[in-house]
Length: 115
Image 1 (cartoon, rainbow, N blue to C red):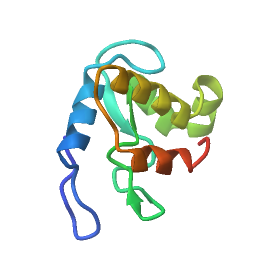
Image 2 (cartoon, one colour):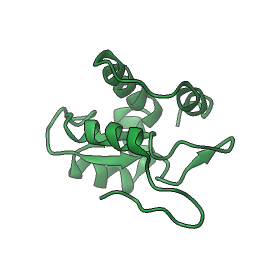
Image 3 (tube, rainbow, N blue to C red):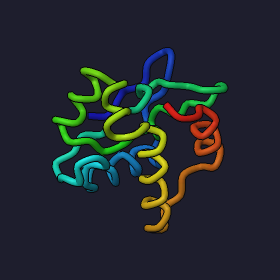
């Protein structure tokens, strides 16, 4: 389900939708199982340095891993790594398939550091 525009933020644009659809076809970045959900690492409306990155900063997780994250993100990160590291791995795969993510998005997310 795609987030709709509100008075505070916009819904995903076509490039962001394409990335999220691509993620849905991938295996979980933790378990390598199929049947994933798109997990927004900081929420769909997340902005950093006035750049909306929430629709890009997503990783594929199985429903079980998604629930595990939301029931204890610190323990999830200790066991499976930081979301930013998992995201970078997905970005490399995305770009290897000939797709691109805007450089300002990558730089903004990288400026968050590990977390």
